[in-house]
Length: 414
Ligand SMILES: [Zn+2]
Image 1: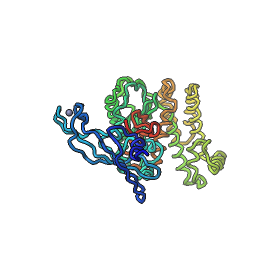
Image 2: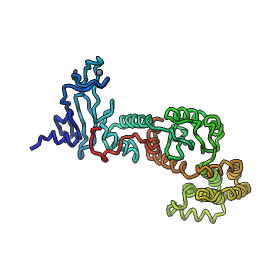
Image 3: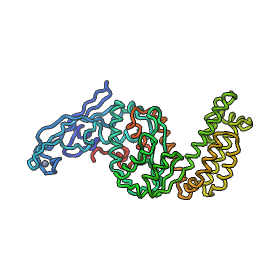
Image 4: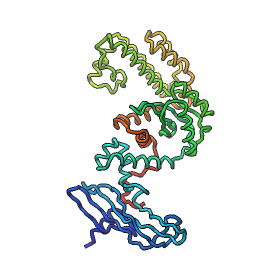
């Protein structure tokens, strides 16, 4: 019969000179421990690559690995240090199953990444029996490592969006409109965010001068910063930002009216949601609203009409005339927030149409925003800016150098 240690060597995907020398079950603790040994006496020098250098001594290290059935699994190894006759350095060799300095195996990290793209990190930590702080640390390092290798060389058209994230305040996100990925996020929502974006773009092989189009909201700070930092970029407005403004205007009307009209209580989500997504009670309430003759009902119709025009624009019918008609309706509607919005749309008609002409009104900003927002809601708060950005890049960064899902190729050697 085969030695069980050999079976585990195979199960863990270890290759010579590494093999499992001992296996310890600790059923009460729910743990299984693998002792991994290096059988070689001579190894290549990690510093200069010289072959056949003598092993000087070794240091004990441990890594958490994928669960074996219900058991948390740990690898332990005496990791050799090589004393090199050629370069004179004594250095620890790299192990094939883990990144340098990580306390998790590569497969474990791959699982962490895969899970964290789908569920809150605190849940991943509970599921895998790991301290959340350690998990955040590993995720941060993995995301930053993956981002370092990312190329932004071909980025030509971008979108910019600000976002409020609980007590962390505002962040500004820059996305690649063609590859539909978040490129960069940074605290604040002023012109300095563009400066930091341009630095980051350049450090990834991109060029601010090569940006041909930028879509963003109406903020004066963004417009001026784009003119300054992205000199060749045509500036346009994404319909997504218009809908955001229309929702804010609607909310303002509703908040003012609800003070006199108690029956409006509890209607907020119905007015903001798409009609397809109404729940039963919301459906009843929204039908009531539409027959009510209230200001909120008029505001809702204005908002919905604007959405419809913008959607038609996306489907190919150029929205200029319909937008002009909407502006004149909004200007006459006797609802101050919509009169103001009407004036804003009128002043930016050209930039809105430019978005359609440049193909930057295709819903990328909206869908990326929805992905990021869903992850933020799931997390129910972030302790640090770094944690927040790790999650945003994980779910929306399309990072190509993250560890692959762990079961695609079940081997822990690289
Ligand atoms: Zn050497």
